[in-house]
Image (tube, rainbow, N blue to C red; front, side, top):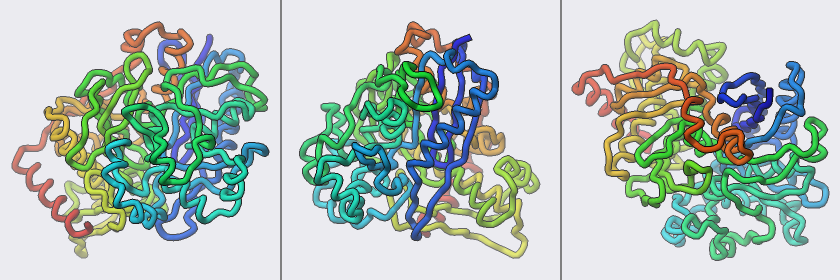
Length: 489
């Protein structure tokens, strides 16, 4: 039996999956990634450790009795805007990676405000610390190693996918795909090229950036990895949210998905139409049915699963994420508590980087279960805010939301999500749709699947959640939430 190896390098860890020709996940391995918080609002990763998690998870898969020569292609998906710089000669990272959640570059964004409309018209993005360009600028201005290597033409800039591709190909290929490039604030989504004017503003040399190709493309082959045989084609790369959209087979205009991970990431496929948002969303590149370039609208919620981690690590009221639903079901409601988990600011549709979290409505009768339920409801409310904006921009009423990610396994959350949107929530059997999307892209490129119709049977529905809450109650819940948001913006 042959497999596709899907590498899903996420914010909190790395998942490696072996996917067979029916789209079934045959083996899975996971390694957690250390989070570094050197100052309030700052978030970093160690690029060397990112690569080590790849080595660890792949070795774990092969130790399950899998012949490495049975791997016929590799697909990569990744946390997107996280910025990495490494040395062309040594291949070593030039400092820590600055993670997409990091807010340290807000002052750089303020310096660029006069150019905001031009940046948005070219990139489809808002001017926010979220994206890669200001992170690279910060490194250039604050890291002597990066500054010196850049001046000598020895610095290589990239997102996490580029770093992994560089390592997997034995330091031979410096490339990325359109979806990751479109999240940097430097890529023109109309011309599908690095924009020279934006590069000039950022003072980032063109030669330091990766070559850009469609998501389904033969990027290179494995070489000198120490963990895999040479010659395995790396045939699919997409940013995690675009990979999830593809894995959910959302390839007709109006189809939408939400991924519940560290944050929540909603996307609606708009096809060949580059829809410009008037409600705080992003226009971004996605994958069409052949793995080429299309457009989508996206809204990013910065804190979702991270709020559950806070319940575990910050408050100590749960031991693992799976306990959250059981605990929340112990009470019928939140007892009037609303939690706004704006730990790193608010993303779409508000874009308030200086916002901070709040717990409102506390009384002496509030306990652990109420806080757990309030966190789950906050995740759904934030997603509903984005859905409201998305439907206004797209000019359509959504009939279904396809869901994936770890928190999509939570039935209480999924039912509440259906109630407050309101529309049907469709959960597949395999909720690791991000990795499956990368596998599908690689499989299409290498001929494992001849065309997209072959993938239809690979997406199997686990459960459908239909709205149960009456309109009056929904209105009250949404009004209470929006009042809480106004307290923190």
